[in-house]
Image (cartoon, rainbow, N blue to C red; front, side):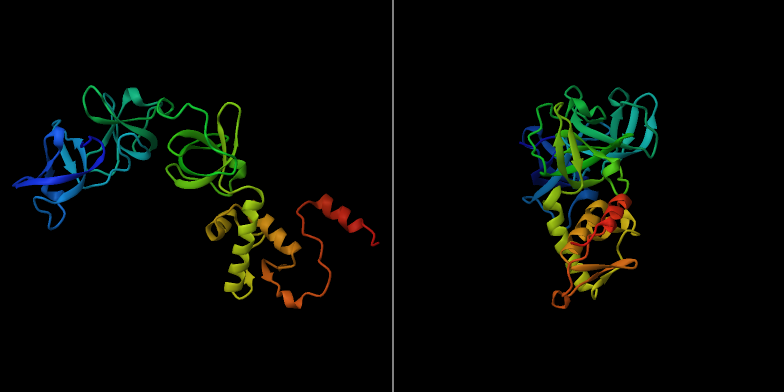
Length: 306
């Protein structure tokens, strides 16, 4: 059955001056206006089309792809505001999506990104948005395990960090102290479950934990070193943004991997960078691992040889 607010595979029934009429089954014939008709489409073909209501409350189809269908979450920008009705969001279609005043948790202005859930109003049959996400997120205990990789939609920023919708079902939090650089509202990224608290809230990370994070990263760094002639201009001086852009990890994870490679004598620390060490050239004992802790470094220097 064809559904309002979703993409449907619909058969072209007939052609008319306004466009093509599609078989909406129980919904009847639905017009696909001429500007949306794919080249070469004829009666009998099946087309992927999204169904919604136009400004005159008629069902209409489009081949445009919305940022979210009914039952989905998305971050959309406010394109206009009507003080009596609500805000209108850019959801990827020629007709903007209404965020009614009653569905807002705070007043919004043009240009604001809004994390919203798209729903079908049972009374009017029209598609609308709501910012009251708690009403539509799963309240059951999260079924994730620590270290599990999950899909995230960055929905809001708080003093502690960035709130993310986890797998379109639960709230999670990425702490600012764990991030190498700020995130953007609306980003869709992959992350990892760090812990699930007794209250059901999820602590998140952009990097896997422990050895699962470091082992693949050391191989990635070695491959990058060999591909660049044995030297990389990355080290303590590098900005977190540069490290994440190159390796896809936080600066903390990068430094842990560099430390592991140093202890394995696979690299040497050079000025403003790191250099690959050919295993065949190693003859001397392994040097002490570098440390950022001055006290620990001081203790190491005071140790007497056996």
